[in-house]
Image (tube, rainbow, N blue to C red; front, side, top):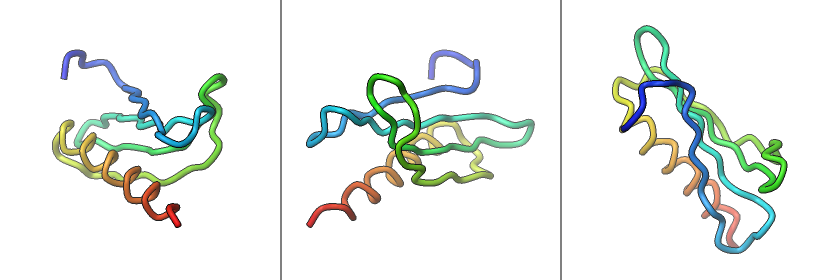
Length: 80
């Protein structure tokens, strides 16, 4: 990871929706990392749906990976 400034935001394009994005926000406390995953409107970045969060991760890269997995699992659960 390049910067040590937190929070860090990452956006994931959704393949079947031009109006929404998946957003991952990574943050760091004194002891560990945590993330939050939301579906947001592309233009305003306001939250459309909150997917979830997790605390207590030891590694920044692992926190990002776990957040992407959580977003992916949620989005896959919507497919009919």
